Image 1 (tube, rainbow over the protein chains, first blue to last red):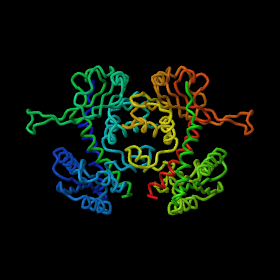
Image 2: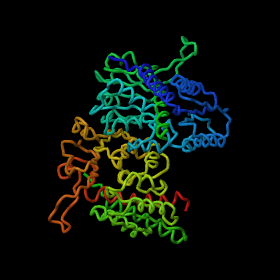
Image 3: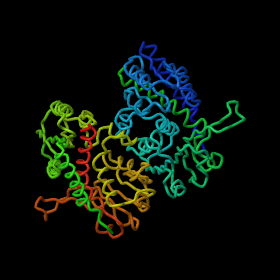
Image 4: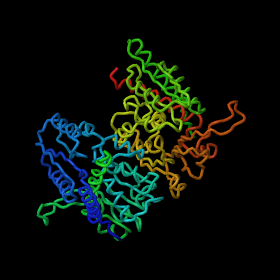
Length: 292
Length: 292
């Protein structure tokens, strides 16, 4: 069993990006600039946005954090999105989800210029991904693909089973892995809550990806010997041994599954850091696509 | 074995649409108007566009056919697309593919206003389909879903195997069938040229959909007893017994497969007529979405 060390892989990507930034600075070129809008004080959101800003600083990207109170009216948020669309100094930006209930998330996502939508949530980017046209691929699926590539996981002709069909992980990942390219060319089965014989289906997987947010859902009996297992779960569970009072739990029962696998990604330190690294890659791409 | 009679189902849809048209006429409301651009004289394209215009006539939709010679410059075609986008009398339009090599199909598809893109090929519509937002679903996948619904094929919890991952059939269909809605909730496996053990995978399918364009590809040994088999293939093969000199061949070896199935769609008379009926449904929807 080998660990798919997302923390180390993401650090390597950040290092490569920082080299690009250094070179651009020497050449007097523009430095990528990511903006993030954060509404309210949700613990998870504050942590994620903080990690994104920190990654920018480490790489040398410029970053701007825009914070609003929970009570911010929708039209104020939409006006800010419009302003960021038009601001030439900003290459890409994200609006951290979830948003308070009085704000229509779909409306906000649609308001973002697809050319600056580095989260890849805009329908235009999802559609471009589907037909393999240039655009932004959502950060988590992109991070998982990158984690596999950089650890030399072969995908061609492999049976891949994905558990969970969310719009931002399971479904786009099923498209990416099934594409006629490298990485890709998997035979993908997308499973979900209505799937029958899930255990049997999973046992056929050369590559098994769990993305449902149910701690410990994947047990040893669901995993084929020698399979590659990728854990996208990041559920916060109470943990009094930690000063923050919680720790992250994956969808895979790591202790019993790991010994059966050829590769397995841990939680934390697997897919999570790769998601942030992907956002950075998308921000650089956003700038490059503008021809700068 | 029961036949999934697309011809009869499509006729029923056309009848329903014609009733809607009659009612709208009585109420003095706008009648849906579909335009089609046809470039050149490719036999298949001429036939398909002709069938679309004929369907409009039968239903009572208005239709406009715009023809160009093979040598039409790209900018002339793009100007026409722009004019159709702006023409308020046109609810939806299609540009029949393929286009001559000197014209960039992607550029043309992107030039179509997604709100008039009744073929559903624009990335914006593909993306909206992925996240289940309002938009147009490509005509063939939509027709297959409708064919199943109107023949009471249950999809929830079924294993569905799709052979062929094209952007306009296999891939979008995999998304539609996997969605958390009805019809939908299938466990979908999307297979292709790099899939290993295809026969074994197909034999697990409760619903088997062939969309690769290889006549007779699906043989009896690939089909589970009692499966639903849908044949999307429409390859023209030489046939001297026909006055036109060819006939359509499906991807399924019908004679040997049919006896094993619970339902099977024939070629011709299965998915083909449903595709055109779906285009008509999309055209009505385009008009309705404008609030007319």
